[in-house]
Amino acid sequence: MAKQKKNTNPRSPNSLSTSSGGFSLYWQLFITFVRIGTFTFGGGYAMIPLIQEEIVKKKKWIEEREFIDMLAMAQSAPGVMAINAAIFIGYKIRGFKGSLITSFGSALPSFIIILLIAIVFTTFRENPTVESIFKGIRPAVVALIAAPLFNMGKAVGITRKTIIIPISAILLIWLLNISPVWIVLGAIVGGISYGLIKTKNLSKSN
Image (tube, rainbow, N blue to C red; front, top):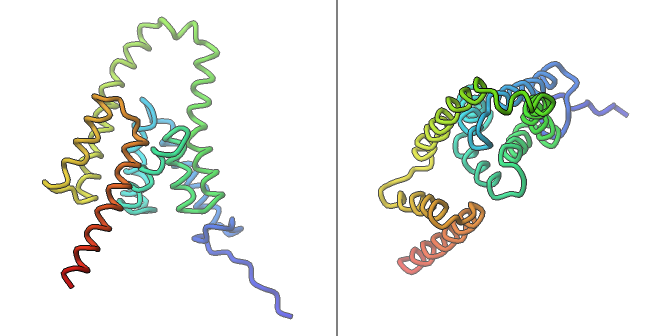
């Protein structure tokens, strides 16, 4: 009986290839998310432009629309948004093992940096130089978050008619302090309702 050939396709999401191509892809995933995690200041949302630049534009591992859908799922799922996004992207690219590598890679820099800061916390706490650094970083983080929003808006095809949706979501979160989870769930219900109404109207016209 002929032996079954072992799957060495580096694109296979369910098995770690022993070939250099398979290992290379896992290594690229790890290094990419370590780099993203290292330069993410200001929370999970600050990771969005870095992931978009590295994963979508440079490496083209996922498409823009897939990236937006994954962000929505990462935001609505329990846990840290940045880790959730890394898990979704890793699984999409390389399955379960890919999700482990991307989540570990994105969390590793924070773990090391926070551990070092915790060790010397009393020194850093009132250090004017460190405080000045973070005062400069915080406004830059706002710009980093805002810039990709315009690109994502173009990708999903926001028009004059649909612009009311993101504006309403922003106002609900900002003014009424409504959880983004409810915003996502409401958008899902609204999308399903719109699809059903549109289908019903088309069937009537035919």
